[in-house]
Length: 115
Image (tube, rainbow, N blue to C red):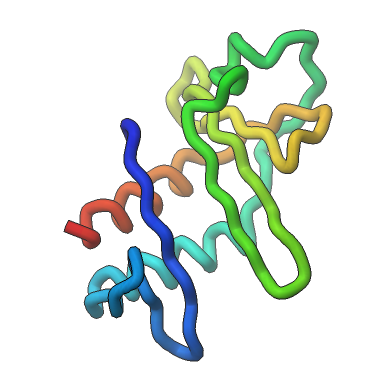
């Protein structure tokens, strides 16, 4: 996804995207991303001796979600050899996860709607 950033904040039933009200399309993309992140499931998880081969040292990207209760971080790594999943690491835990690429597609959609 390259070096890009955005800050999204849910305010009641609306979204602020980089401090401004999100367009209807951006709002839909953010809703989809929030739903995907809330229900994310790893297709595999394992322990490794080095994070670098998985694109996690340093990570290729990071998604940070802050709620009233806590902050969760998902470090994004490289795609697996089949291109069907990417490597990720949650909150600097010991395990590396494989997560379906749909999460990246949804994230890309937010960038596209942002303009």
